[in-house]
Image (cartoon, rainbow, N blue to C red; front, side):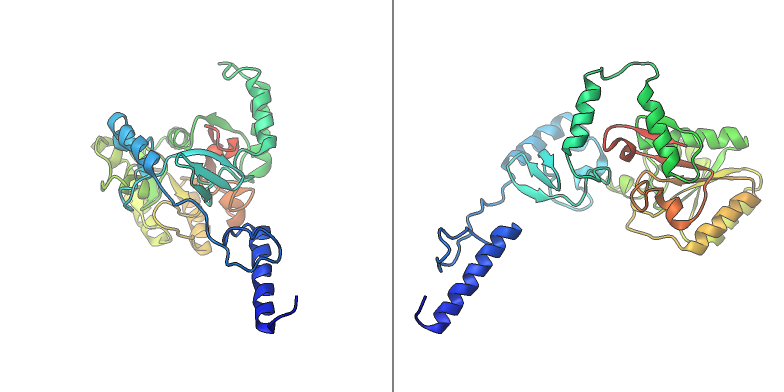
Amino acid sequence: DGGDPHTISARYTLRMLSLASFSLGLNLGATPTRAGDVRMAVDVRAPFKTTESDRLMDEAREIMPGGVSSPVRAFKSVGGDPVVFDRVKGAYAWDVDGNKYVDYVGTWGPAIVGHADDRVLDAVKATMDKGTSFGAPCALENELAKMVIDAVPSVEMVRFTNSGTEACMGVLRLMRAYTKREKVIKFDGCYHGHADSFLVAAGSGVATLGLPDSPGVTQGASASTLVATYNDIESVKALFEANKGEVAGVILEGVVGNSGFIVPDQAFLTELRQVCDDNGAVLVFDEVMTGFRISYGGAQQHWGITPDLSTFGKVIGGGLPVGAYA
C-alpha cells in the first residue's frame, strides 16, 4: 500500500483482528466495510436489558410460589432476579428480551447433544404424531429399557417413572420392601428429590428457601432417615452399629452436586460397598445427575463400584419428563 511502515503494520494488524473476530464469532466489534478499512471497529451490540424478564417474573410471583416451579430457580440464595428464557438452539439460549447466552447448563445435564437438535426434534415429532399418551404399554418402552440396561453395568431390569424424584421415591420403597427394614442412610448435602424421607440435610434444593430442612415433613418420616458424612466411612459404620438390623440401605450421589461439588474417595466407595454387604443392606447410587455424563455407564462405571439399585432422571429422555429406577 505504501506509506509509513508503522501505519502499514497497524493496518495489517487491525485487518487480521477484524477477520479473526468475524471468523471466530468473537464479536469484538462491527466488521469493517472493506478489507482495507483501518478504522477502529465500533461495538454495536445492543445493551443487556431484562425489562420483559422482570415484568414476567413480577407476574409469576403473583401466581406461583416464588414465581418458579423449582426452588433453586428463585435465586434467593445467590441474589438477583431470574432470567426468563424464550428459546434454545445448540449451545445457545435467548431470553425474552432478546439477549443471547452461551449455555453451559444444558438443562442441568440432559441436553448432551445441544438444545433442539434437529435429529432429536424429528424423532420426537414422528412419535408425537402417533399420540402423546396411551395409558398402555408401547414398543418404545422396551427400546429405552434395553438402552439403559446396555449402558449401566449393574442394571438388569428397569421401572420407568415421570421424574428423578419419583424414581428415588420408588427405590426407597423397594429398599424397605426387600429388606423388611425401615431406616435408610443418606449423606449430608445429598439431594434425592422432594420425598419427605429425603428432605433431611438435603443440600441446595432446600437451602434455596432458607430452610434447615423442610416444614411439613413429619417426625415419623424424618426419624427413619439417618444422616452420615460424605467421604467419612466411620460415620456410616457408627450409624449401622447404633441401628443394628434396622437399616434397609444407603443412598448417595456418585458425585455430590447439590451442596457444592464433592468428589468421592475411591476407598470410601469401596468400603461402603463392603459395609452394606456386611450388614445385609442395599446400596443405591442416585445417578440423576451423574448418569450418562460422568461416563456412559454413570458414576458406578467410572468408579468401578456395583450398586444394588440405581436411579435416573430426565437425561434418559434427553430432557423430556421421565425417570427410572433399576
